[in-house]
Length: 257
Image (cartoon, rainbow, N blue to C red; front, side):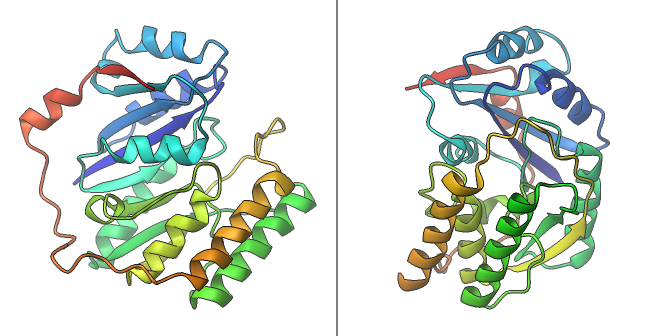
């Protein structure tokens, strides 16, 4: 079972090296794809240094020439994945990579190819506005789409690769989080939840007002639009990546306009 980890990065010079080191220590077969969304600090320089060293030379490094938002960075990363499952990992270490094996184990033991696993956070340490904003968006998601989620906005979403690459995602910023959830629910996937560790940081890029409204609009707009359905020919029976595919992704670095 190979897991493709997509890491969107923007000005994370303080944590990106520690994150990649933590991923390298996991007892999993990982494909790691880092998408730098035009950082203006030393993030890209750090990544270019790391990619010369094992085991980081096995990872793929992609850079946007202009800042386009987390959603666009994720969509770029999704276009490269070749593993059986896909996981989103933020680079700021709010989410502990040591929880990843638990998410993978939950998906495996569920025995449901059409399933996703969300890491459910304890948000008690977040500022009250952020905490209630997250809760509000989750409640609206449950009401509009008939699901029973505890934490829709979580970064940790583990999904079958075939499904991820079939989703018609358009979100450019943080509204991609509800967009992913909407499409998974409409596609008929069972969303399972696993409690995870969560350490909120002080200098958070996410703004409850700036990013909360687009997320709410995404939920409302997609509810009024035609529901998404997976292509009839699509199955979630993943096949192992070939050796040739693995070799092609090792240590590659490129810039996307």
